[in-house]
Length: 489
Image (tube, rainbow, N blue to C red):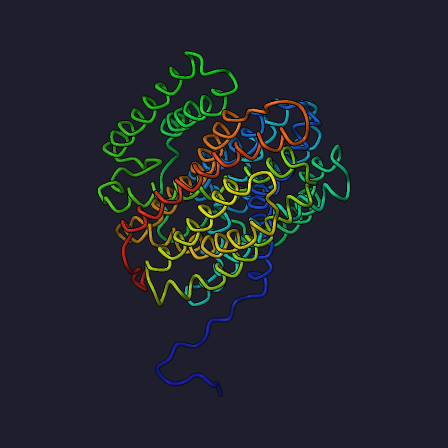
């Protein structure tokens, strides 16, 4: 005799191996997203240890983010064809080896190459996480699995600077930054063994995923265009903006235009493009992906600026730099934990509240730097960073859902992939622009710690002003999204 009520579906039992597989998948997700923020506090020590250029510091963050974004869509398509298990395993193996190579780097070029490979590897295995969750969990419990994934995303990105600071404090400047990368090794080895045993094999396609091959020409065009735009943004200030930087920017713009024409033609031939042109028939979707780019440009650059100011400018330790981020981390975790419930009750208003809080926080930080100057302490930054973190938590979890809601349900899978890419591209562009502003305005007027502190604070103020401006623009763009997401999406 069962306890099921007549007319109601019996509860679906989730096999134990599904939850074990979820732990493996989220271990990989944790590593990939931890590395988006943990490296920030190591930048000043990398600079002195390797005698790295200012552009190198931007490349370490931007190169990772851009490579990550470029790999997302083709990796998802490849997983549909040959099986997500082995795409996940291969990407995770390459990520672990690249982490080892990052820590072994003897000069800035070696570190940049290893970091780009690490980003490509992260972009390879992260799409498999959501795809395998779709395959393992029925709709009735899939939401719980994705909620757990959202928590891991929030915690990993928020705790990165704190973990990085603790490692450098414990092992010193010379070895600490290398161990920031090597922290991935034990996690990666255990996750690889568990993935081989626990993840389901096969190439079963998740519902709604497109069939067909990979659009390699489109991938080459968009990759070339984004790299051509990023290189002068990062190197231009360091090189004095020679003619080649302007020519490269123009070439990048032309390649992106060519990518658009190619995708239209590729679609007319009955093939599956990298970015379906039909998505852009929805003006709200176009505005939404611009929102994703602009918001992540503002969000990712905050601790790039603060980490360099706190250590290279004001002479604090890496741990003290990491501790500055604690209010933001706490706010992010609180906001993310409540964002889904608030999104169901308030609709788009939760995104408006989230970006408003981020904007208030960043403008507050900018004003604090402007008015207090080099005498600023972490106590002055505590309230605005807590507010900004809370807003970021409200925004990051539900924003993709609202952007995807601007297109037809049949296009949701393709739209999700484009949103993920734009988030990573936004991170790369944000760091490139902020790095150019920070180092382009850096003037140390004379010898001594006071002159260094004053110069770095002035540059950080300018950079934070640009981050705040990105956030204001993101706030305006939120209004292009639908007020509600239907329950069926």
